[in-house]
Image (cartoon, rainbow, N blue to C red; front, top):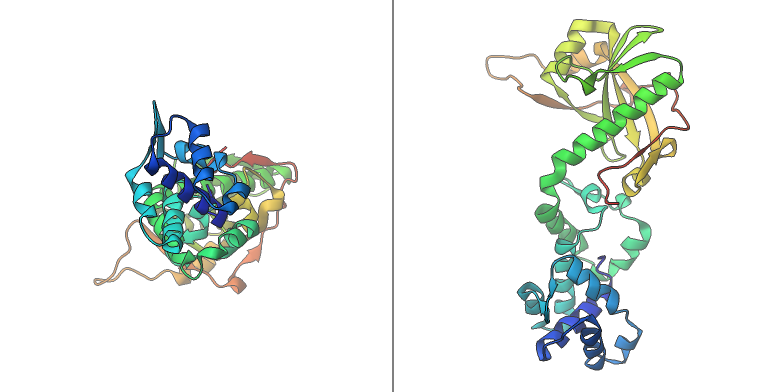
Length: 303
């Protein structure tokens, strides 16, 4: 439930109506909210937010409409402050699907927020970023590992489809094991061992390299390469990915990665992985093309 100004106002009226007298059902509840509202309430859709409050657990329907204490406590203050607090509560209880992509450790990347939604949230300025960060920290951070895994697997599938589209014989080895230090093995027309990293516009050129992947790059030399597939911002707002959602595919080989890695010393050694930021001029464009007919369902977004 996106906390537009009208939505927050409607939720305020609904919560207030519930405190005046018990309400037996949604219809009686929304009618009471209109009765106690201003003339503006006549133009506000109240039945939709009422149902969404039930869906996100802020309201329970049994014999009576039961509003959560968290919501009731928001209305006992000045109206502007109450509306902002209601908006924050709605972000916490029902975060928008784009929140997990638009917010990260470095802050809010507004290019991942759909333009209509960003316009609807402008009334929360200048504290909008802080509100989104709080919602992310409380609701989305626990799922970061799963999201990263889903994005990575999608990248592997697109690269695999592109290789096969170009006539290569390629095996998706990471489906069977993570121990070899690469994701895709190509046996024809030339032997290649490809480690695939996926990124969005904000993280292009960056990736985590595990110690095992680095060891594989040393072991296989020129047969090993790293492919980064960069998804555009629209990819994170759709439920079906296709070639139009790929911004670029670029490659660096083991000889380029080798000088970047610091050697272990008595005072320093890396363990599971290292984070690399490779300058744009060190990448080359992939010499294979995307399959224009390939598409997958984006599992990490809600249906």
